[in-house]
Amino acid sequence: MPPRKAAKHARTKATKKHAARLDAEGSLKDTLRAYEHLGHVRILVPLLAPEAAVTVKLLGNLSKDSLTLNAPRDAAELLCAAEHYCFGALATKDAADSMVSEPLKRSIEQEYNHLRARADVRAADLPVPLKVIYEEMSDLASRALSTGVYRAALEMARGLEALSHVEGSSAAFAEAASTNHIERQ
Image 1 (cartoon, rainbow, N blue to C red):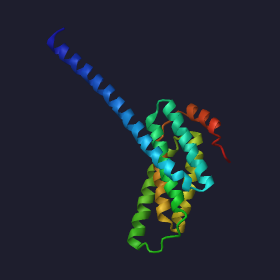
Image 2: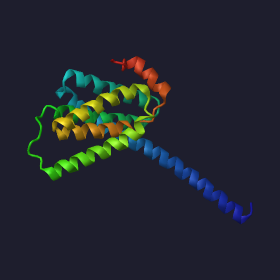
Image 3: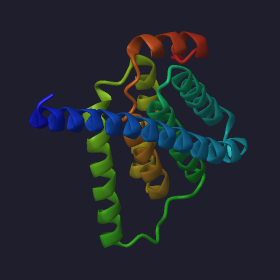
Image 4: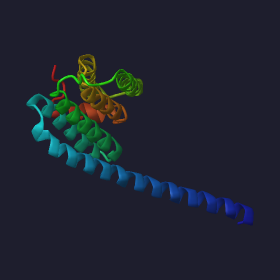
């Protein structure tokens, strides 16, 4: 092989090896993220009201299915959403925070709107079973913001943003939905 062609071939081969290594590392990082979120969720679930625990368990089951389907990033995002849902559900038990100053209130609302805008853009592409959970979290977030329970509103908005990152195939989630009975309406 001429030297020039050999150098190009070596670069291409090295790039492919590097990409494969990065994919493997990314997969491991996402699996570790899922494991860490799962630990947090397991601690929080016993503290939740029964109806909130059902949603969290559904997200956990979908995460488990994602790992089975070799989608660790989706599993991590689902468990991240579950963790934020837990904190949001626990924070709704608090009364409205009357000690929030106007500048802080504006900052909270700005952050809330920013998170919701990012989540809502991607939510259109969510598989149908996740849209049910997304709508539930969205209603809880809006209600919390309107009643002045800002911590709950921000946690739910962060959960919505995490949920919007799930890219699972519709077929896989449709199967998981029938298995996990997500259509609760």
